[in-house]
Image (cartoon, rainbow, N blue to C red; front, top):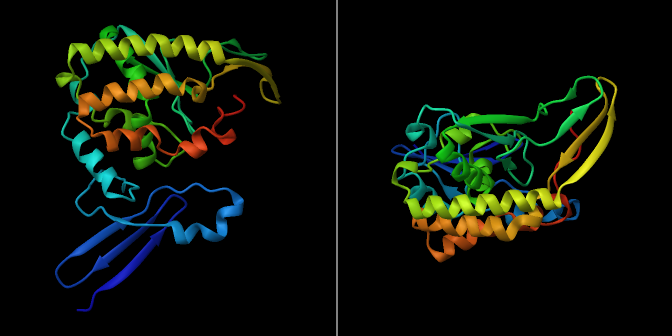
Amino acid sequence: LPSYLLALTNDLCIYVTLHDAINTSLFSSRYHRWHEEFRPYLFTLIQHTDISTITFPNSMPKIHMALELSILRKSKLLKSFSKVLVPRIGSKVFFHNAPRYWVRAMDFAPYFWNERDGEQLSSHVKILPMPSETAAVMVAVLNSSLFYWWFILLSNCRDLINREIDNFPLGLDSMSEAIKSQLGKLTHELMIDFKHHKQRKECQYKSTGKVVYDEFYPKYSKPIIDEIDKVLAQHYGFTEEELDFIINYDIKYRMGRSGDSDEGED
């Protein structure tokens, strides 16, 4: 049978399959962002990578270069977060479930109040219960550019759900105490910086009336997040090139004006 190509498209990615009588190969592109003026040049920028050997339940990784495959293979050598998590609750990690350019995770509940219900947790903020000794490490990891890359790679790029967190290959069981200590210190610095740059916002909704909430801007804390990724690079054994890719992943959009925090809460 002759070989043929089949292109599959959706709002996230383009997948191309190459089929012949013996093998079927699957190719993927990255998740592309662009400003309106670059639309005419979009297809000339697309490149594909063979992801035939990379499998995830209910997901095809959005990868476009061999370097990403290397990072993914090194990461997958470690056990996922859910497989080594001790089933004991001592602390809570709070995370925003609708990231755009940053995953905002905190060791405190972000302020939220509305006229109808008073002070409470925003419906966009979810709780991740875990042992106290693990919480600071997890806050650091969720805020890292490495986890953001993982989120874009496998999710719908809009909603952060437990699947991406539970399956993240963190390798807590093999993480050294020195690495955990460094991540804990960086989490402390990051939370202070988050609070320093936050802004209290107000808006009005028909259903809840006046809403007051704290909005956070992780892009202003990028130097601390970079330090987190450097520590994680030691844990995973990333090369300098791989670390540079992670630190600068999607940086044009994440650090630009569009990289500001989501506006509005409910």
